[in-house]
Length: 329
Image (cartoon, rainbow, N blue to C red; front, side):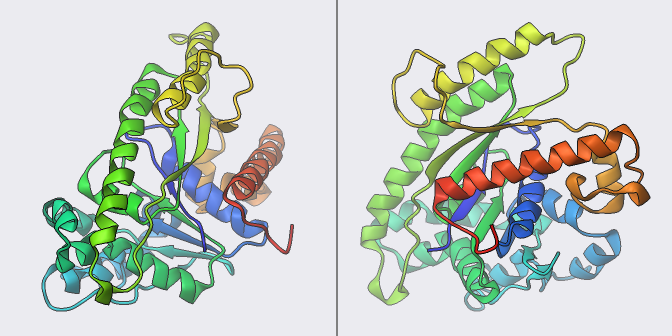
């Protein structure tokens, strides 16, 4: 089965979308066929990946047939079922399911139908698994080796359905109090969603066919190491870095731990490449692909090379943890 990896933290501002974007391109660079999915109603992944002129064509004034919302609309407006979604090509191996602000319209319906799954209601399952059905069909059509889901920083109904569509969960965190609190909220919520879905799926009408398992297996966390500021000296970052492994083990894995030693749950630490990001946004390419023509000259070039190495090692470790290999590695 193709792994569907959700990048998720209910605390915003940790660099989640940038992480998805760069991992998607690096997976493709390493020979994987990749499908990136923008399930955040803010559509930040789509705006990061595409030119404004492209988005203007995809987001028409009256309807959005080429976005993921367009594929879902017939089901939610009662005119039919989900339809095949447009895959926007970002490279030879990388495709994007384009996000849409209109996704916020289906939040209430997703919320209402979730408890009805426990009653075995057919429409409840069709609605709750709508993301999975669209993504699964697109992944097969794209012949994807891996699917990366960018979802918003909240614990709402849209994200719950996105997690039902996920086999794995990777958590971007920052070394601060807010990320620590985010893990404390996120862990128990994932346990509850996983448990509820495991019970509900046994009630699914057989004529609906295959159902997502909603495994939501924890892959680990990626520490987004932001540049230090005068107000937050090194000691403060160290304080939170030490506490993150213990909190992750307890809240996400439900394993009591009093030691931060041998932290196998930290997938990798990623530096905040502050000077490269503006150039990358202007060039509409990942930071590790910047060149002289993009303004990455002098000391920037060493940062570009380090960025490439960082994301290369990160994606290789993610691939190892979710059990996929590339023929080109």
